[in-house]
Image (tube, rainbow, N blue to C red; front, top):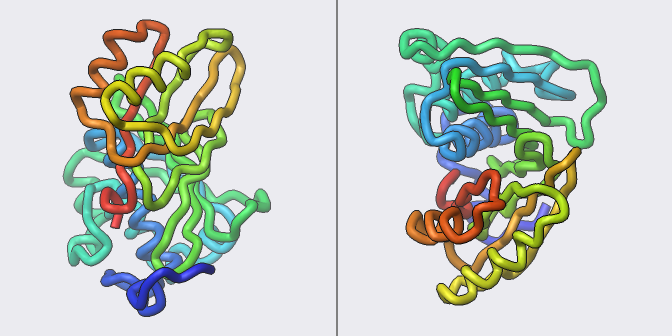
Length: 224
């Protein structure tokens, strides 16, 4: 674990009992909610490793649902999140997997609302920190600090070159690119110097019709 400040060592301001199992889990749920952009009506939560074994005692379940309700890690409402989700019309189902994960604190969130779907794979890596390792069917690691763009396009299309040109013309250069392939599509995570504005995302959609999906992802400020 690399610490960058005294706040990393002390841990986050949070609803307990565990920074790894509670605060980190809440941040994964919050990331998924904000990327989805609205409250999901159906959520399937698959817990792996230590999460699956201790989720009740460490309040991992209420933390994940609290994040999905758009609650920050220190929001007192997290304690009542299961009941609040039910009252709000969010149906939540937990699945315990015996599959051995890469990281012991791993969760897969499947969000649905009858129109859109989003799958998020995340890991709680200690001290309230989390790492997103998958978006939908693409294995991509989302930067915890820097903003990025998630772009899906058909294989064989030179979409990334066009995206780079639009971003650079708007003075928002790409610092790193990660690409994953699945069936007939590519998923690309473009790490940026600063978050792409809604106007920039709209321009990309308009100028590059080969883009199937594009989402702007904020840095740590969106999930901490």
